Length: 487
Image 1 (cartoon, rainbow, N blue to C red):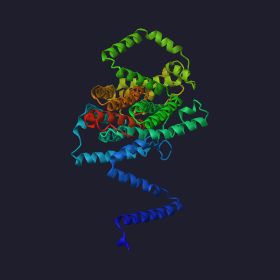
Image 2: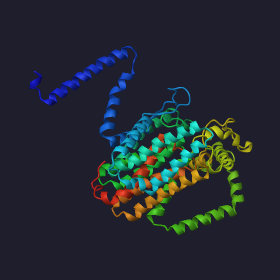
Image 3: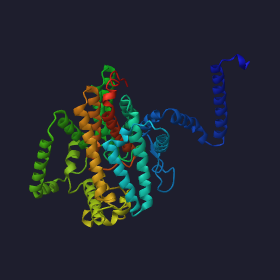
Image 4: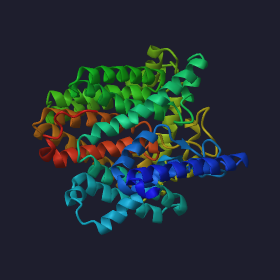
C-alpha cells in the first residue's frame, strides 16, 4: 500500500505519526509531573534554524530580548547565577557556530574585520582580557569577559553579515520593537493597577527589565528610529502603523519617569539638528569651549543655585524635570554623585589597569565618602554599579579602558557622519542617520547609567553599530536593494 503513495504523502504520514507519538509521550510525562518534554519541539525548531538559517536566529534573538527573563532575578536558581533566558543561550550558540564557520569558511569579507570600529573592538576586548588577569577578583572578571564576548561577537560581527542585506536592518528593529510593545502593554497595565504612582513606576516593568532606568533607556533608543521610519517608508499603511507605534513609545517613555531617558532623546534631537544643517565642527567645538569657560568662570554661583533647588523626584512632569538639577536633597541624584566619586577614587588608587572588569559593585564600598552617602547608600556597598558607562570603565579598566571606550564611540560617530556625507541614495542616508540617532541616545545616556552588560541594551546597541558598519561597507553595492523595501 505504501508503494502507491508519493513522497509527500509518506512525509505527511511520518509527520502525523511522530506528532501523535510525541503527544502520547508528553501526556504521560505530564501525568507524572514531568514538564520539560513540553519544550522539546521548540528546542528542535531552534536547532534546525541554527543549522539551516543563522540569519533567522539573529532576528529571533532580537525578538526574544525584550521579553527574556533573568532566571537569577526571579529565583529559579540559587546563588549569584544570572542568565537571561532564552537570549543568552541563543547568543552563546550563535557565537560558537559563527567562530566554527570562520575556521572552515574562507569566504567572509575581510573588510568587516578591518573596519576602524572592528579594530577598536579588538583593542577593547584585548584590554578587557588583560584587566581580567590583573583583576582583584579574576573569576568575576573572566565571567564578565566571556559574557561580553557573546554580546559582541554574534551581535556585532555576525550582525554585519546579516545586515549586509539592508532589508534586515528594519527587520531587526521591528523584531525588537514588536516584542518591546508586549512589555509596554504589561508595564502600563501594571502601572494602572497601582494607580500610576511614582513609586510603582520604578518596578512595574519587572520581570522583563530591572528598573525604570534600563526600560527608559531602551525606549529612548528606539524613538528616533521609529520616528525616522515614518519618513523612510513609502506606503501610507506602513507610515500609519509606524506613527501609532511611535505614540505608544512616547507614552511609555513618559510613564517611565526616567529623566536620563528624556534627556537623551532631547540630545538626539540636538544631534540631528547639527547633522542635518551641517553645522561645522569648528563651530561646535568653539561653542563647547565657550560653555566650558562659562561653567568654570561661574562655577561657584552655579553650584549655589543648584544647591538651592529642593525639588525632589515627582510624578508631576515639570517638577520631575526640575529635580534633575537638585543636588541638595534628591536622593537619586546624590547617590549617583556618590557612585561617581567612588569610581574616581578607585581609579586614583589603580589608574592603569583598574580593579578588574565587573568588580565595581564588590569593591566600591570603602571608597564612599561619609559626607556623600545618602539614605539609599549601603554600608557594605553590595548593590548597584557606577551609574556611568565611562566612569565604570575608568574604575574597572583604568584610564586606558575608558579611553578605548571613548575612541570606540567616536569611531561610531565618524562612521555615521561618513555615511551621511558620502551616500547618495536618500533612503540609505536616512536609514544610517536614524540608526545613529538611536545610538546617540545611549552614548549620552551612558554618562548617567551603564547597561551594556545586559542583553536588553547590548543587543540593540551592538546591533545598531553593526548596521552602521554594514551600511558604510556595502552602501554602494546595496543602493538598489533598498528600493522597494517592505517590512
